[in-house]
Image (cartoon, rainbow, N blue to C red; front, side, top):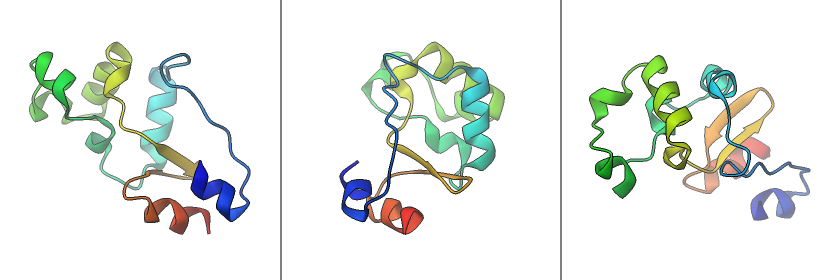
Length: 99
């Protein structure tokens, strides 16, 4: 958000916990995502606790299913602008997309 503010770009923030994306929204993000779709899934302690592996999130259908069931695994921030979506890490990627 700070990067968008610094660049003077208007933005909307979506709280993915309070308003999680549904399967269609996730598929829509994947369609315009410049990163590999599997990058949308966080590989953190929750991922491990659920005993998930990379083979569980190889396909778009698997990714969508996992993210709908476990919204906390959604990688963030996701930045969407100009018909493109990126995962906003590292932060300089956000500047490049919004510039």
